[in-house]
Image (cartoon, rainbow, N blue to C red):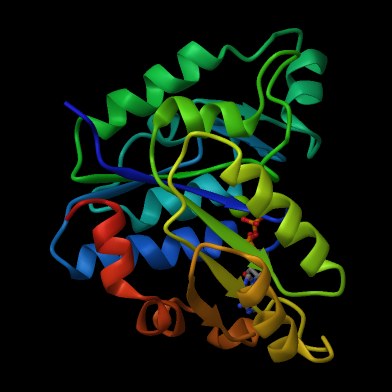
Length: 233
Ligand SMILES: Nc1ncnc2c1ncn2[C@@H]1O[C@H](COP(=O)(O)OP(=O)(O)OP(=O)(O)O)[C@@H](O)[C@H]1O
Ligand SMILES: [Mg+2]
């Protein structure tokens, strides 16, 4: 059986993948679906009495339809905030794509829809042979591209969209996320990107002050039907 899910990638690190994934989890829960979020590989983690924990994974763990054990949400976690292939090498191991895919499948089997957040951007290496893009292809989930709106994002977004289009994955659309409150001509950038990127714009999310950065603004603005179509719901 083909499992349902979405793969969330972005133009860079720190551009709102987790925030958008959390919003999508809320949106799909509102639709009555059982959903889980997963960050299979995370770098940048805190030491706790129960082991290393990554902030993204904690957020996704908390937003799912049920709160699963941390290790199910984030099986591979490394302390230094560096590229995963480097973090793994420093930890004396090598990430194995088959094992990562298996862990995702195991969770996908237990839910209506699994939202998998990538790590960094699309071409980030997981090991000497595989990248985040390879993981997305193996999972076969439609890929949502989050574009962090800031100076330089047109180049990042066009290159990433082109790289996604070059792989055998569906891309139901992209999401513009206003992460920089001081960005000039942000709307003009979005209009330009609409003309340069083939998949449709699913949402243009505003820049929220930290105090108000809950997910409400996200799931009222996202093109709900496009998301539901993408997961075949
Ligand atoms: N639209 C927004 N308005 C205000 N703050 C935002 C917005 N989107 C994201 N942020 C904030 O920007 C920071 C980075 O977002 P987030 O952690 O979701 O990025 P990411 O792409 O998942 O990063 P990483 O590569 O570390 O996984 C967070 O502090 C988040 O709360
Ligand atoms: Mg994240």
